[in-house]
Image: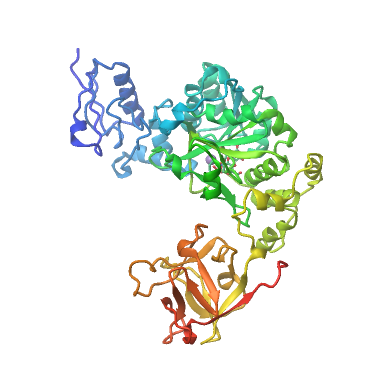
Length: 586
Ligand code: LR7
Ligand code: MN
């Protein structure tokens, strides 16, 4: 009795796909927009299982993308777009709660198959790589606190479905004391226990109290049996071929930590697109000791022979990496004095390099991660844990360079506990200095004390006016003239060795030089990209000359406008005082 059909429509797909008939369901259902997502999802799953005899029809099953081949929302990493205004009242509540609880679109996550297919996003060259014949086996450790069940299980399934079984010793889930709402301990425990019962080699351990991600990972590490440990966040998806490229460098040298190419899973649509191999970025950090990305330096591109060769990276983001278990152990694993979140990524990065290892990015290993715009879970209210963790790592690994961080927290270190055990590890392993690390691993790093000029930049024509990089309320990032206040902040600039005019991670940038040569443009304060170009300046004869040949000029008519114009050595409005650094002492 094939009297009814399931209609699956994708409103964003080209019309030719919309009415494509895949089959007819042998039962009476019409599933459309007004049905709850579970029902819609089930219908599609059914349709999928019956391929051949099943018809997929048309209503927009999730107001989203359905892959015409497989019928499921989000298949192949396609986006799922929800028009939330079209949801029923109850659905709308679920949708809003999902965002509220997770800081990502749980409603969409719940619609997508736990085992969705992803496109093979590897570079074709990756399929030709000969991996080491004896790759070590691995324990994959996934820690979570109040994670959405669908996101967590999709992480687990992506590991299981896309890892060669002989290389995957086990998956260890560490529940860091989940305690919230639908994920109450009991609920999640029961659900998860059921969820994983049938999955071979998945183990679940739980902390007895909220430990934070650092100690949660330690808990997983000590019970792990694999030769290599791989850590993942609980909202990831491993793509085709992700595992071998992470293990290969470790098979050749156990003293390396290897990170995959971290792909963005869109927090709203769950779209996952691959990064082209030539656009890989490596990790750095700023002097607030915050991890950041930057372009792979030219010297590193040249050092490698093939585009599939691992790339040296000064630091790692922290959540996704592989490391030899014994070596991780020798390195003292993580600092168990670090709480909740933060700092552990740089601590591990620095000690890997300083203690004789290497940190590599494997260009053929792609793992998606849901990047969130805020943290959805509870943080301690009485202590700044990120600062505490960061001071701990600065004390142990940064030598004199810790002063740059301390200046940025007003030398107020707070109570960071005892780090003497961690210092002993550094001594025992005879690790190299932070200076060595900066010179050899991260020579691009901006070092404030090695800047050429520093402090306020004061007009000579109007000596009470300084260049100021305050960001105006309308989002205008142009620099302006402003009464000199002597307080540093927006008026404190440094010229780096590479001729940037910097304020922390922002650089003076002028983009109008090429092309419209005659047109005076605004100078903006823009994220430093360390590629010189529009961020390269010269300070000579009191003039601030841009790489384009134009100079910074203060308006004669008012004290606020600052713009670029043709350099004239006689023009006082182009003359500025800036202090030269005489030695490396500040
Ligand atoms: O108390 C907690 N207990 C936990 O178990 C807090 C968190 N967690 C879990 C959490 O469920 C998640 O699985 O720890 C994992 C990481 O927490 P997130 O997802 O809130 O962190 P993040 O992705 O925002 O932050 C990045 O930096 C962190 C610094 O401590 C960790 O190293 C994260 O693992 C790391 N994530 C990544 O590197 C993914 C790529 C992001 C980038 C850049
Ligand atoms: Mn994360």
